[in-house]
Image (cartoon, rainbow, N blue to C red; front, top):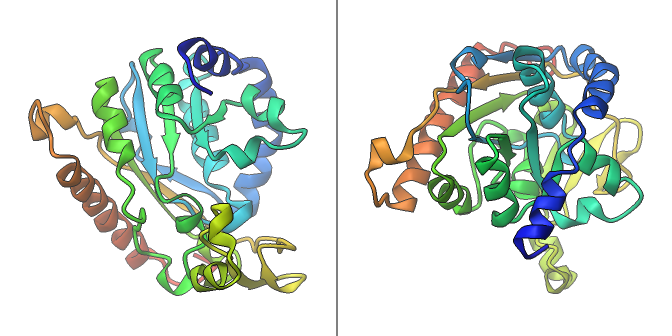
Length: 268
């Protein structure tokens, strides 16, 4: 994926008409099933690139992207794309072309920079699978596994970081363990598999990644927080770890607030 021409080609594959068509079909289903609610979009930057940084939830069948992006397009229209950074494994198989037309792009710093410079919104989940498979008992903990590359991406592109937090998707089944120890025991870390998550759900019961259980209709609430102008707040030469700690702190405080408002698991 190296080289500016390759990055330009990948970003250019976003198809607004196709995205609108798919969103109009899939988003209402996702919204009804999860009773999805998105708050705070009124504070989102109206123009220019923005790096949206979110916690990741729900395991393999995460609703995060559709919940946020459909609400964004409902509010701002389809003139400004939302690109989602994704692991290379997502593009293995027949759906690769379809995903790129929807704005899913390979998670490289070059791709992110190209998209941000074009004035687009880029959605990143720094915690990745490590975050998406966190145990349900620790569902309200912001944990990016020490990854701070998103801060460098925002600084290099000169765009604000827009923190986003979501609650509910970690209750779509019972996530028991990430299985770090299991992956290591089986030697999977040599194949760059650091986790082997174990969950319990319907209809298959215990699942070790496969087969994926059907997500329960847990109420998902997503909150968009105030944009963070990194240079204005931390200076011309910001400390990456300090910025990361601030972003995670702001997100943790907001997630704690959502948790206090939640009365019952799944029901919301």
